Amino acid sequence: MPNGNGQNGYAALLDPAALNKIGKLELIARGIVEGFVSGRHKSPYKGFSVEFAEHRQYVPGDDTRDLDWRVYGKSDRYYIKQFIEETNLRCTILLDASGSMKYAGTAAARHEGQPLSKFRYGQFLAASMTHLMLHQQDAVGLVTFDTAIRRYIPSRSRVSHMRAILEELATTTPGEETKLSPIFHDIAERAHRRGLIVVISDLFDDPAEILSALHHFRYRKHEVLVLHVMAQEELTFPFESWSDFRDLETRDGKIQLDPQSVRAAYLEEINRFIRQLETGCGQMKIDYVQMSTAQPFDVALAQYLAARRGR
Image 1: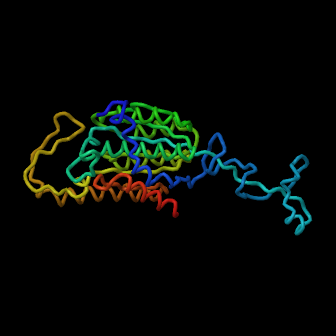
Image 2 (image 1 turned 45 degrees about the vertical axis):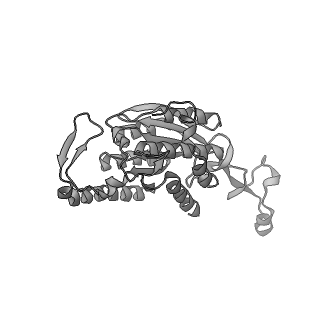
Image 3 (image 1 turned 90 degrees about the vertical axis):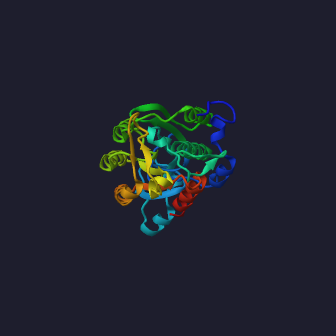
């Protein structure tokens, strides 16, 4: 893995061509979020901003400049116009650094001549999301994890914060096993202010437990975006001849088999796995985006952001 310096370090994660495709697409939170300073996103606090919320009856001490004279003309009563204050979005990116994320495959998109592993793909997604959020003056943080939280970088909106996140991305290497649901529950308890949670993972764990943990985020009023990153081979299982299949999350998990004898059962199982996650996320109003490493990460992300903006 690259170190934190130079073109092969954190700077290499910011592909200018990729950022150019998504730089103009702003990720506006659909939900109501909190923040510290005036920005673009809706806050649960009513103030005197630009978006109308409701009327309330005038009480002595209110600023008469906020009186709605049209309502007065119709009702002969004084009412104050209340508005929805707009505020920065707080985004936390959760990047899976478990062993299964090491897998690249031959069908993966390439960067600098090398096929992207799921983890490298996730690094680029996380770096691009970080750039995007800070570009629109939102706060962004990062969590890297496998069986436990590796690093928790709280959300900040300073441009200088990008370096801390990119250095962490560039110096993190995939570990071994993973357990997603305890990590998600932990983050949900730590993230007190409502915001956007972005999960970047292959989600190889019990889907029922994953969905339960994602529900914890929704219970805490967070908006959630799940970027489900998988290799094309994991989706299609194109293998033909006898092969050694190795578990990347354990040191001795290896089996030799004829892929043609298990293809149908494997595809049925993986499709059931994906459907369960997609359906569960849909029921909780969580954005679920399936991504194959065969598709360039910038194209996949730009397509999602454009579709989101259209909604």
